Each structure stands twice: as C-alpha cells, then as structure tokens.
Length: 92
Image 1 (cartoon, rainbow, N blue to C red):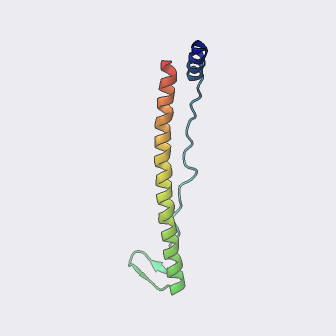
Image 2 (image 1 turned 180 degrees about the vertical axis):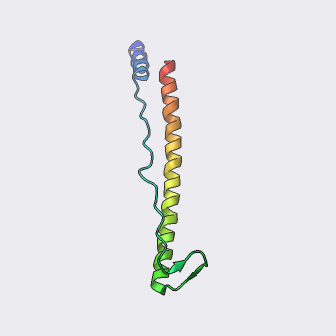
C-alpha cells in the first residue's frame, strides 16, 4: 500500500504541469485633455461641467492605473512561480 502511494506521488510530480502566466490584458489609456484647456499657459475657458467631467476621467484613470499595477505585480509573482515550477520539473 505504501509503495503504491509513493509511486503515485512520485509520478504526479514528474508529470505535473506548469502553467505559464498571462500578462495583463491592456494598459489604461489617458483621457484626452479638453480642447478648452491650454496646457502651456495652464489656463482654461471651460465650463464647470467639462472641468468636472475631466476630473472624473482623471480619477477613473488613476484607479485603472492602480489596478494595472496590481495586475502587473500578480503577473510577476505568477511568472516567478512558473519559473520555480519548471526548475522543480527539471530537477525531478
């Protein structure tokens, strides 16, 4: 019984599959600056709605960047796990 159990454990390690990680799907894209904002002189002639809408887009973009950074960190962690799995497979 012990021999069968050890044989099963040994062969399962030898034939284990290492799953390669997938990178994040896409980078967030910056919102376009409204036409009524002059970035060089740092002035604008926008109405309140345009400014508020742009600020909301910037805030949303910042959240998307934070999410993307977390996804990248998870990808790096998964890539490290994948590399270690492949090393273990080579050593068995």
